[in-house]
Amino acid sequence: MSAAEETTGEETPWGEVTPEAARRLLVAAVDAFAERGYHATTTRDIAGRAGMSPAALYIHFKTKEELLHRISKIGHERALYVLDTEADRDGTAAERLAGAVRSFVRWHAERHTTARVVQYELDALGEEHRTEIVALRRRSDAVVRRIINEGVRDGEFDVPDVSGTTLAVLSLCIDVARWFNARGSRTPDEVGELYADLVLRMVGARTAPDPK
Image (cartoon, one colour):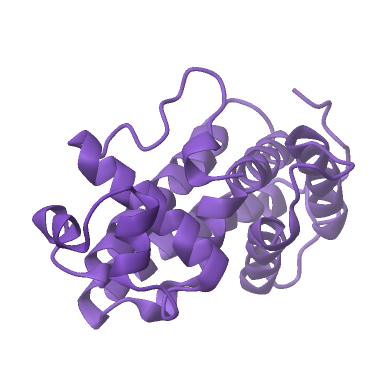
């Protein structure tokens, strides 16, 4: 599945990227980075996938690294929004944690090509851009940690090490992007349900919430 096809419902893939030529280049970069890795991909590779000349890329992006930064920032902001939305819903900590995991996993499965680039090419960013993306990752960490802390406070969860468990939960969810296959036996929804159940067991949830 290409980055352009990673969409559900009425969402427009990369609709916030304009003009259309810039969007084509960004989608081509996602596919190239996911397939070959950032360092093995050239600007000529990206432009060729977009059906454009190499010179055309520099009209919209100064460097290959700027392209990666744009992809990474948009991806991390989308993933953070998914977590924030579920964390802020009404309900018990178990319900909100299950919803957050379910949605976060589904995002990484439905957009596995994009997510592989977003989550695993961080070290290719320059120092300034990397610092910005790390800050977004820390916000995602804080959302999950807050839910777990609230569950411990309210007696719903039994978690001796909240920070370590938060890291484990996020790592479990993010790794879906590495192995998920759209032609495989499980759908994104099914993987989301499975992982929500696994995480509730991980935190020692007293009761399992009904899936939404």
